[in-house]
Image (cartoon, rainbow, N blue to C red):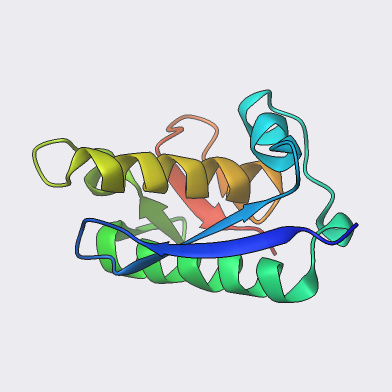
Length: 119
């Protein structure tokens, strides 16, 4: 069965948020329980859109930093209630959970709020 792909307007300056789901919310439940999401099980277009949205959010709302010559992203501005509305924070957390669970992003071993793109 194909994943259901829906998009809705968010009530924040991020415009449209992509929500990828399977009937019964399997993908969301898998993310919340820390299960690695099998990318091959996602529709390729949905996955590509999700990756692009995550990249856009990191480049716009996270702080780029250099550690040992590599570019990392400090995600604290994305989830700071003083800087972002609650619904934007919820979307950012969900996007980061998805990206880390899917192996797209790697968290720094000493600073879990700092991430980088895997390979």
